[in-house]
Length: 339
Image (cartoon, rainbow, N blue to C red):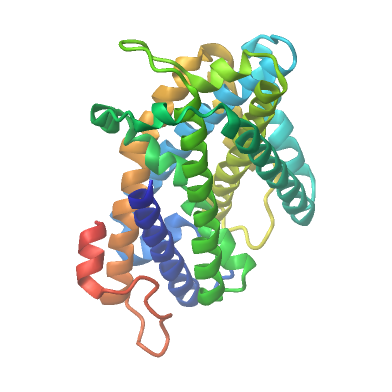
């Protein structure tokens, strides 16, 4: 978890650096991954980055809609996935498409506060259930299957261009927002791991979903986990949908907050349709694995380092007095290590 935090913090800061330099070159308020790749890696690099971007976002949006539909169905007493998944996507997409951006930001703040409040309740209630002996057990063979999930739980880079725009291209403010914002989930994941691993009985040869086990208990603790999961998936869905809508808007040359509703439909309708037709729970894990291995590690791992290299040392490099300071120190050595 800590290694994943370091890697994802570095790549997010590299995207911020390239974003600010690209915005200067193109004389625009905000730019997308596509514009950054085109400016630093050329047309071929932009095409490849765009393809990976679309693959990643549709994989994760499908995963979130599937899981959100399942959770919504549980909350409503067993509603069928065919109806619950599109309803969940619409409950997030419709307000985002129809309300002013400032109102959507406030709603997202409320949802995030709900995530934090329910998480604190779960941890406070779960500590008493922890058996210290369960925490002494380690299974190193379980690390490899978990690796694709680590980038997914930390991924936030899709909103970095929007963050740069909102913070008026202030690299210092963006750096603080990234580091503080990423440290919060790290602390949450560590606390969550203690509660879950310390309260879930281990049975050799069996795979147990502690979340499903807790939700099925029917007590207040299980209900809190259900609504925490629902809010967490909802905020994640909104973040990735926003990133994809901004990408579409950049392709159309739209400036500022001008994001017509049809862009939201293009982002969320395909995942909702896939979830409604093929929405069994295993699809969530398959989509997450695909996104983690082939999407996030390429688009938000290798590509940011390559773009930063092109921005600093390539033909598109700005003069030292025009470029923003290096967001990640170490020069060529650090960029090579990240890539």
